[in-house]
Length: 152
Image 1 (cartoon, rainbow, N blue to C red):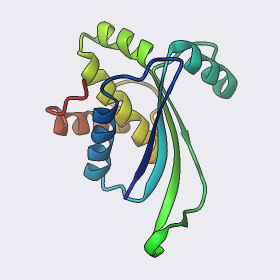
Image 2: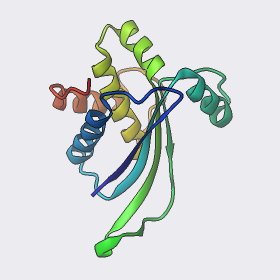
Image 3: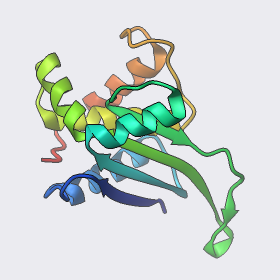
Image 4: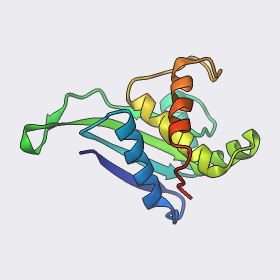
């Protein structure tokens, strides 16, 4: 069982927040992740820019930041272990800009950013944003599998 905390910073609570949590659970099931605990924070550009400046020395907004934790699994009921995977931060403002730039619906871009963040928590990475990067190829494969799922 996974524990996902959905948070918002500097924005109103989106009406689709429950659908986002359901989508996250579907992604975790497809990639066979169990007993993870992590948060997903939806925010504005000011909030993510501050994080980007403080933790990555980049004074600009971005679409998604992922802060993976490197802790040992913690005790959990029934002698299972839960892994504190970390935190995903998504700027809904940059998401909208990306959707317009790439000519996709915001729903599609939101799914892409959620998947992207989860893959980073899983330890995957990419050296650039070219579509030949292994992580980005896998991300798009997951997008294809989840194409019919709507968040908003």
